[in-house]
Length: 287
Image 1 (cartoon, one colour):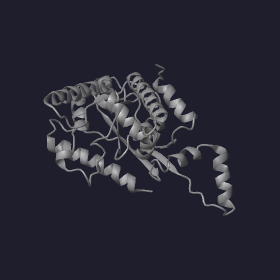
Image 2: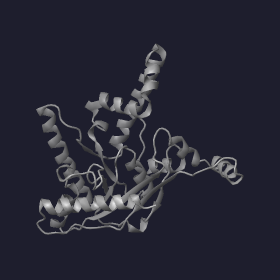
Image 3: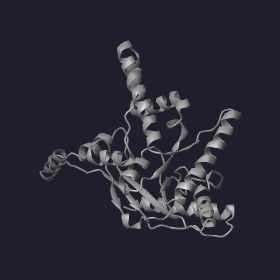
Image 4: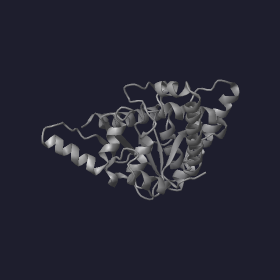
């Protein structure tokens, strides 16, 4: 199965207009050769990590936390279902599924893309985490084991100055998330690294989309990357024939923050994560 390295994936996404290309702001705020953790807003879609990767420096490659269903080879069926629902509307699936040839075509496309995706996930060195609610005691044990291994892998990468990216609390803003739903992974990582004599630099990374990127606006973002199209739309706008509002996708890297309390309590960790949420939310509200 064909695979691409992290750097080649970034080059491809920057060069070929197959996905929206973000504008990076505040690159000078990203530490170099230090333990660095990117925390980003991640609310309703799964593409924010992609935008972060394209906007950030390609070297060293960032390690991302990713749902186990996207990398577990024993979960191919669930991965294929998620991928199919992401790429094809329910209406189109129903229409194609009503006929033998189109149904087989849909199955082959979905299967091929699923195998390619799983191969890529293994190649890009993501950190698998178990996010969905376990349905059996066996799944509960697997969740505990998987997430413990993810924490260790993240800690090892940071100690070796390999950057990691994570949504600090599943993407909820400080207005939505209550204390019971806020994981304390970020300050716990900082606390463990501090005991090793290292200071974790936490970079709040704010992904802004205007308009929001979805099935209805994706083509608009892609077309805007094609220079002739963009010039033509600007000409029509200048001549007042058809108004053109250029879509805007930015990734803003805020100044790095640290978490340094000695023997931090859970309350201190919760407050820190809530402050990260507030910083992301306030930055999102700014034009």
